[in-house]
Image (cartoon, rainbow, N blue to C red):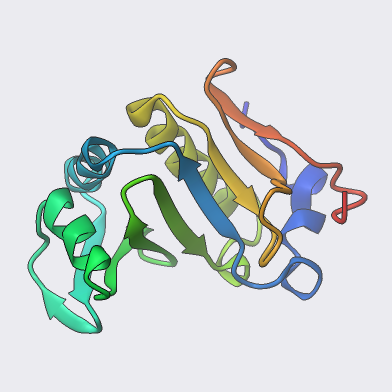
Length: 163
């Protein structure tokens, strides 16, 4: 059985209500966590592309990504866990892993399952919560990977996405 059922959460995936690009974050990370993420992307066989300030480059080490961000460059890792779903990771700092997903690409149970699988795989690899919040609503997660439960759980009432 899936962690989340589409019929129970579809209101959280309405781009007109929650913004098209919710924020996903893993807080309390280190350069080592970023490196684990890079290795995870490669070991899962997810298609990916790295750029620095818009210039395509080979995927560097996490230390180099974080160092580039500290000098004002914009490291960006685009990841496609499946061809139809893009996740954009931005290395603003070592202390958090931030990425965006597009709710327009996450409609229906099958695509929700892909998102849930990615959040679970990242959370388990890092041993940390992975939280998704509506666009521009930090601190109000709607769902996320719960380390203790070992699965993705609802953190907001889907009937009232403003909670």
